Amino acid sequence: MLTGVTNGGCFVVRNGKLDKPIKNLRFVDSPWQCLDRIQAIGSSTRAAFGYAPWAGGWPVDPTIVPPLMIRDFNFTALADTV
Image (cartoon, rainbow, N blue to C red; front, side, top):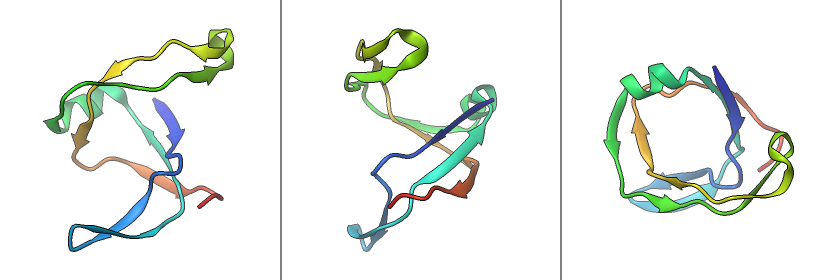
């Protein structure tokens, strides 16, 4: 199982335009089940440097990842931040 929180990128989209920010969402899902529910894969892009205490701290090397559209993604709760 993987868990995480969206970070500053959740917005209501109405008529194809950003309407307003919403609270961040916590997710819990199995990576294997997510791979089974992929509906679309975009072009790979380089993700920014990050911080990971388990990987030696700052900075973590950037990663090349494609955006995924996953059917029935499992958001479980609202996070406290907007």
